[in-house]
Amino acid sequence: MKLIIQVPCFNEEACLAESLAALPRKVAGFDSLEVLVVDDGSVDRTCEIARASGAHHVLSLGSHQGLARAFQAGLQRSLELGADVVVNTDADNQYHAGDIEKLVQPILERRADIVIGCRPISRMDEFSALKKMLQGVGSRVVCWAANQDIPDVTTGFRAYNREAVLRLDVRSSYTYTHETIIQASRKQ
Image 1 (cartoon, helix red, strand yellow):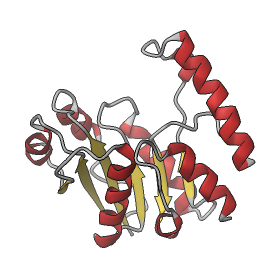
Image 2 (cartoon, helix red, strand yellow):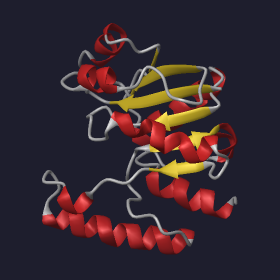
Image 3 (cartoon, helix red, strand yellow):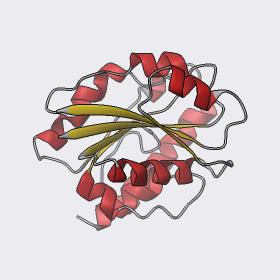
Image 4 (cartoon, helix red, strand yellow):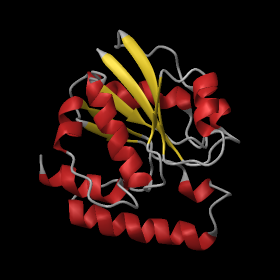
């Protein structure tokens, strides 16, 4: 089994090396683990830092196309590289990389095709009170549309098995987080 951790980036030179260093080198249940950095047209040293920091693959989109397009391009490249499971995480180190093993466990146990991590939004100091409130409202709307109970619908910390990746069809160029939840709920 092959795990690819994809990290979409846009001008992340300040934090990318630290984020990549925190990623696990091995995860139980997988024979191999590779890191794919997807550069969304950065104008800083993101690609250079990704290569110097041990990313196995760097996919550069050439121009800024938006998070959703970077996410989708990363999924496509992960499939081409033979991924059985893809973990998506952010370049700004807001997720605990040590949780990747827990994130993929339901997929390894065949209890889920997609696993969505959850941030403690109410305790996140970097989120304003307004942003926290809007996160809650947005989550309730998406959960209603998807008929699912997902506490953090905007998190980028997610795991997908190969079959789930093949079923996704992201159409937005801005964000994929809401759309993929609703799509997945309708393709069960």
